[in-house]
Image (cartoon, rainbow, N blue to C red; front, side, top):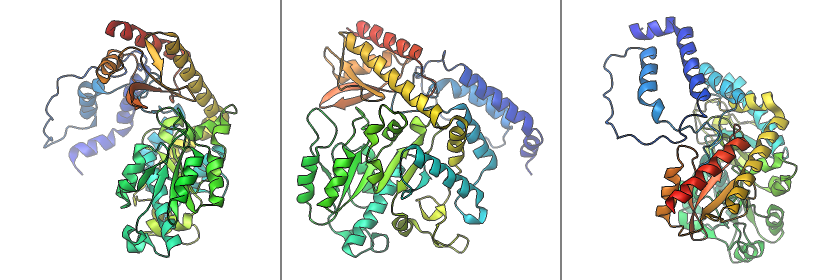
Length: 462
């Protein structure tokens, strides 16, 4: 064994304790650190060491060179994208995921698969899905959407008497995928799956909304020869608008289509009694995307993909090799996702669900919704700002009331970056900014700090 590696092995408990102290210090200072540090002058990469000098020195080098440049994305005022943090239990679970280093894809080493299936069952219950749905962990919403649409592609083949998994996507002929306000990952998935971005057909949305117009969808399906795919939204990224899922599902009485629902973070509305109606009808979907490193507050990367047609899922992703388990009635996870290697992502989710239960995670969701509403109200009262959409759940979509051009919005965003991170967007042709609440640490005090920073910066820009 390499001498340095052997020395690290001998000192492993001490090295892990030093790492624990570094992690604890980083988390303890989240409130004081700049949310997005000012970018330093770019430095060239260091050369690869010919001879390493151990974990302790590497930890010191990381803390000196890289840690000060990392954003405080685990903290309460990182409101860009839809980024959760990691609850204490999820962090513990993720550390143990690395320590046990499981590739949980095979029944020959089955505990990891069993733990994942138990966790998927808990998530299914959390989101109000029936036992007709089975689920698997994937890396994020993009891969969850891709997996769901890959199953939809095979369903189209089943309807047409071909198998894209065997014959290729070209065997389907022209495909139409209809959606009102699809997330950008849908077009990416269609490109990846060989269906093409041009197969995505935009359907008119309701006036002033990002929710699809069911009547327009009905007409579009009538104009679509043969079976189609409909991508519904349970929480759009800009304004958290929800399609009328029961109305869409009812269209199947007249039209033949696969219903895939992108509920990346909107599915968590099911935890709140006041908002659960938004996810009514989710169970009628043929496939569902839910991202977990958003509102479940587990570390990146983690998402889950649900479907009613695990048989088609296995037909797409089956992997034949002597050292892998057979398909069988309960296929090994290796046969259900694009990944042959599959870290035990479920453990962090298992930990946080086991530690805090439905009630604990409902409290996070409802506190975040209250935070978004408070920020929306504060900006609405300020003449410097205009809300671009109602605050429906956990996202505030807003802009400057005077000259909301991208340059001024960039200046605003950069001016507040030390206090709060928000991301740029465009809504109905108007440039704006988004603040998304999904971190378990965020409190009303953080909302006040964010609002104060935005107001101050708006005055300076004016």
